Image 1 (spheres, rainbow, N blue to C red):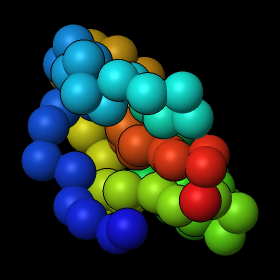
Image 2: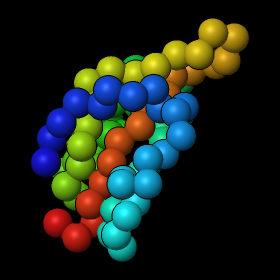
Image 3: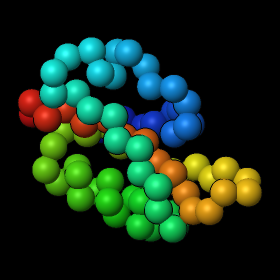
Image 4: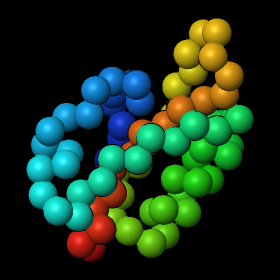
Length: 74
C-alpha cells in the first residue's frame, strides 16, 4: 500500500484514516527532509504504509513535517 501524500501534514486528520483498530496517522517533525523521509522509510520496512513523497515547511517554524498512514494489521 504505497501512495503519495496529497495533504498538508498540519491539516486535520480525516476520520477515514482512523476508522478501524490498527489504522494509525503518524505526524513526523524533523530537522530536515532526509531525516523525516528516512524515518518514514523505517516505518515502511515494518508496516503497510501510505508514504509521502515530500515534506512540508511552515514559514517561521523550524524543521519540516511529514504525515504518513500506517496499517498495523498488515
